[in-house]
Amino acid sequence: MSADLIQLLREHGINPSQQRLAVAEYVLFTVDHPTADQVWARVKSSSGVRMLARATVYNTLNLFVEKGLLQQFALAGGRVVFDPNTTPHHHFLDEADGRIHDVPWDTLEVRNLANLDGIEVRSYQVVIRGRRRAH
Image (cartoon, rainbow, N blue to C red; front, side, top):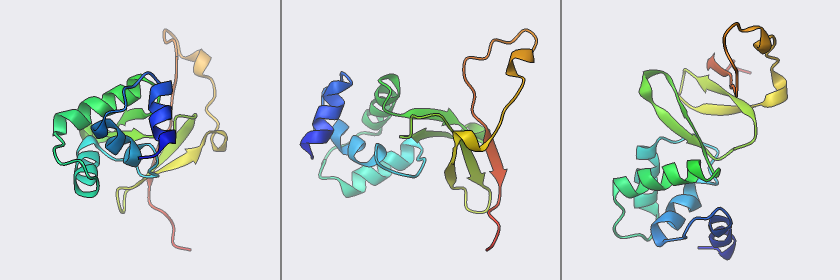
């Protein structure tokens, strides 16, 4: 466990327990958008943490979201994924392999949000679904 990771958690008001560090080591640096179960399976199989309860992983992920280290978003079918990229961006869901890819914020233009009658928009994100073209 790196001292930088311990410091990062402390800067966000998180006590860096062994379990939290093991979860952070994977989920804060992945380019994937894993579910909680995927995080649990990955950390359980690759970390030196002997006892890692699923509830601990769920609670840790929710804490990381609350403290601004992760974003969480729901896809169709109730699938909730976690994203360490907390800067504004959109997502592309590849229907061929199920992977989620970040799309730079300024790649898309969303207009007329102020014209939505009776709706106060606080935030938004576009999720594009499709398949990658063969090159």
